[in-house]
Image 1 (cartoon, rainbow, N blue to C red):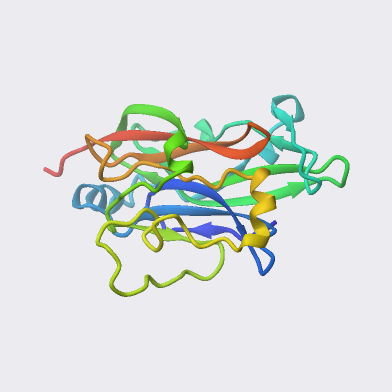
Image 2 (image 1 turned 135 degrees about the vertical axis):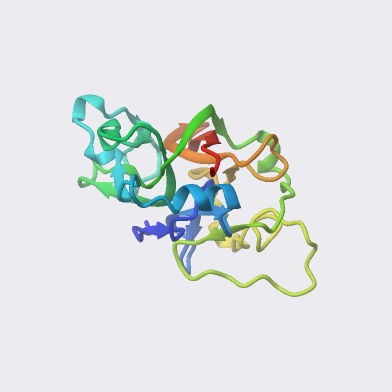
Length: 242
């Protein structure tokens, strides 16, 4: 597993996916897709440092054992996946009348020893003051995305848990991952591990109206014998500048 923390430098995350890294493509990692720059309305909101709360990490490993939902997996590296939803702690909002914590980073960690090794998800939350949630939706990777690529605008950028890859020249203007139409190429020798991991991305982009959907929570899941992700997206209402 690749335990490095992935951060978007406080730029709101719009998508997440699991991936297999390393020379043998046998290290489970998480990638985040984020806005390459803040829209004006978000920049104004983020600039209010008087009511802005500090960024904080939170993970399913911090929950009480009675609040951890463990699901068994067949991969010998892990015996269970903690499928508890990771979201901000409501106590972080004490003394603040408005604002939303959005995801700006992610990390995978494992706890325990075999045969009781549990995979956990951790998220970095950044506070956007002077805004409220208009609508939220949980989403999983569409079935079609596992067979063909989504098209999306390069206004979003993927941040990898290892070194970022520069886009090749003369590529089409609309790409799925911002680098490759189907994500970074996976060597044939790693295909056998794909039966344990769903690497389809869960995202919201320019094609999803009516505005910027931002990630506010996520959880690991097991579906069809594979480890995957479910992601919670939110549309925000912003306090207009006077």
